[in-house]
Image (cartoon, rainbow, N blue to C red; front, side, top):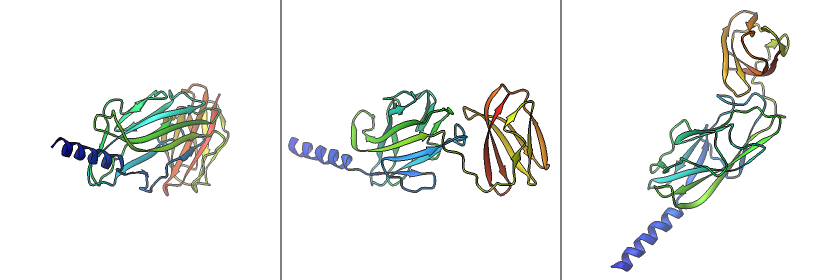
Length: 240
């Protein structure tokens, strides 16, 4: 009888170790382990710097997952946020998520929306944040199966690609008390600080516009404009 129980437990352990999960991007496309996702100037914080993802369980039984910040290059994790089950900011290398327990994924289902990786610091040097995702037991203390690896990279040499909004211009990227813009189209203008937080937002319907900037401290900002056709453009500016 004891032998049968031992054999049953061994079969369960082997089954768990061989269980499968799939890492998916925001469009539901499968992502390969070892993938590097790149973000550049203007792509920091919410929402421009978000890398949203899902984890899908392909098994007939529930699985449990955790993630870990394995290493960081030119960074320490203090500018980074990961949401996997719960959200954590100011993270450190070696930290596991969730801190306690595990993320439950039911049989044949996937994690709900909201899980993401995001850097909130516009650094002068490239930064890498290397994560692994792996299966565990329900308590999150015993690892099962293979690792999935992904690197979130911020590269300041990468510009923000325009998405068709060519009919927009600023009078200058060095601004004082006002930001002067011009376009023949209507659009929404949002200004983000270097940590990716929105500090001003305005719907603009006139060909020329002057947005007051005197209440903002001197420093670097990003102007993001989106027209009615959802074409966008992001421009880096400096407030004197």
